Length: 287
Image (cartoon, rainbow, N blue to C red; front, top):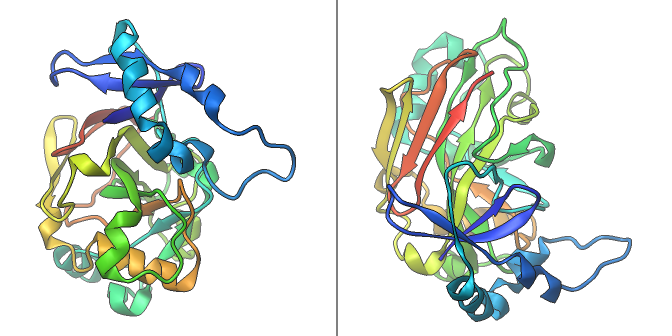
């Protein structure tokens, strides 16, 4: 199942062939979510309830009128992630290019992922597939980084890699936009609009092997990044194990798994096209 959020916080199921995608509005299912008063929950309520609501969502989609996807404004498929966890230099060739290019490393210590660990991004940086990335510091180098994103579906605390994938609700395409410089990594990657998630969430049952997906990023039609998640140094299960050893992962938390080689700058007026097999494609404007 492919779940999207669109327009005025509506919920939809995406169906159809890639050249004829439609959305079935299932916003009514949100009435089944618990009502919260302050303090707000520490997780995304829809993602937490998804296993219980899935059959009702699918039945509602079957009965709903199909709306053409074209023309809808796609929001981030997860409304309220409490944490955005990200993996640095998790492809060998990207690690090598970062070490070799001083406009990437800026004389900072680029450690391999086993030594660097993971980092966090601000949730305020999150946008969906229909919104533009707005360059915050045009005088600096601002790079694209395509990544597979795992959406956590259940509370995960100190889980082993052997059980880790059972904690995944689904997957999406991510762009981890980056200002190059000497500041801490989490600061340079947390500008408003520098975390793109979309175009929708594909439930985990449709992607039984997240280590066999092709990634492809183009800028203005020119290929910049292309690889397979088979080349990840630490796969999704290992990343969940590592992250949950340090902090409890909650439903709706996002795990950006790292970007391959080919990172390069973008400028206002560019259009980034990001594709991952099994998920889909999204086009993101740069402003």
